[in-house]
Length: 300
Image (cartoon, rainbow, N blue to C red):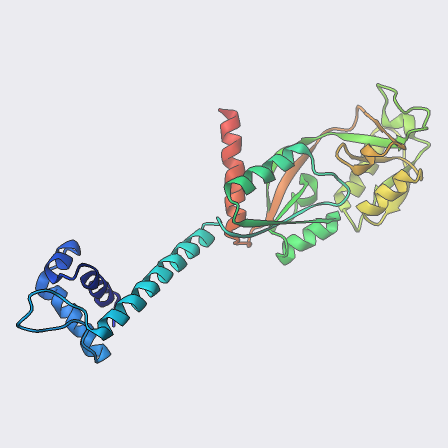
């Protein structure tokens, strides 16, 4: 039994005319009749009443049962094919996204998620927060499909690829009671006597080294308190253990006990979306395609 035999039978049962059905399927009537007879032979039942006394086409009781059953199976099969195509195109499924545990989700990122969900409501968007090292590890383990990260955290990792989204300002966080809080035109050198709460080298080698390098350029070696992760860095900062360089989106910026200071040496950092090059989740490809097309529209 093959698909052509089934389609011929369904068409004949629907039209109750071999001539009309053969014409609609663009095959000759002998070929059409041959498919019906071959199907009957394989099934071992007659599907149509054959009588010299009747000119009309009539289903046998067995044929009527086969028609109803095969019609349902055909509809189910077509639905399955449609669902499979939707999933293969990334229009349904699950997209797992990671974000920094120390940063709030800013408006620009929220807009990206909202647009994607509005366009593809059948994609379940799962989000989780993590430290710098956790986000990288989850990408490698493929327990994350995408990570919203700083470029310097992912740029030198051969297994990872990334797309720039926008720049985020780097600022210095100090206690709201600090005498220099609220002052403009300050440099890192103005804070040479402070303890700098830095991300540990084991958590993010590039961020750890960046602070030391920037302080060296400013003419001093910083006194450093290494925080094991972004959560501890924020906790130390909010409890007044020192000052810290971080993104303007850091949750500390929204703590009334913490003040934000603009430092001229601190340049903006690139915020990117990163992924494992071997991750073949079609939902990921669809999300990235939407970002690329969005950038093209903005440029135009």
